[in-house]
Image 1 (cartoon, rainbow, N blue to C red):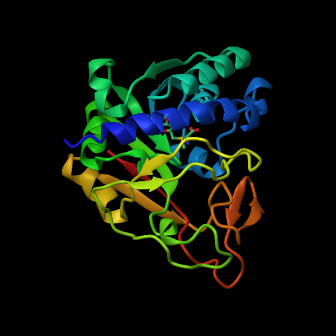
Image 2 (image 1 turned 180 degrees about the vertical axis):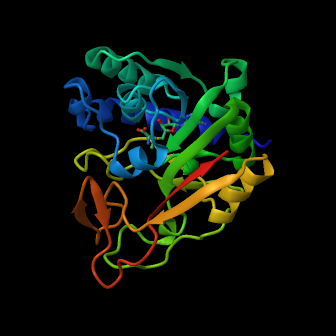
Length: 266
Ligand SMILES: C[S@@+](CC[C@H](N)C(=O)[O-])C[C@H]1O[C@@H](n2cnc3c(N)ncnc32)[C@H](O)[C@@H]1O
């Protein structure tokens, strides 16, 4: 497996920086009030989680992890950013929810976590940080109990080709994977707080839909469904408009394009 340690370490610094920002700007009040912040697509597609063990890979500040806990799951969240996990633990305490959080790169998890789970889960903004999807899928397989399932919801790789600085749909970035990461300079706006200019650079990878599905298939997972959605839970391009339930879509006339996908595999 090929690890890009400079990129991984740099990305960890970036996520530690953003965890502090997101502790202020992320919307988790509902968790503290006794509710949850999970959207209708995921609750509908994942289904009943009561008393099921759930492993959340790349859990960030734990708002989704804790939403599954609120819906009855026994949750374990994993992230390599210690500051993210400190925020997650604070939110868990304030919300009165039980959750276990483990600081680890997903690739190193077998050194720290031995059990297996009914559900392995990951969502939105996760794959671009990973240099090796085959190793990622192997980790998913390793942690699934027999009869358990993997579920993910993620931005569609097709969306990532468009220029996020121009107003319409202009192709700017490659669709297919390249081994070397794309380096983003510091200074752009944070996605959850446009007043905040990010200080750390990042290193990201693009993965095609074929890369994602084949990584899972080659690790013995059977795809149960793949859904493509014309909505996404943040304003990913300047021309997007809010369409309710926390989602955004493209304007009329160019709105029949995939922005996000979800899948379940056994
Ligand atoms: C966009 S956030 C995920 C947000 C998520 N949808 C949620 O529940 O809030 C991406 C997360 O991936 C984590 N991450 C990136 N690379 C990682 C790796 N190799 N191992 C573990 N966590 C990683 C980052 O620290 C960050 O918290």
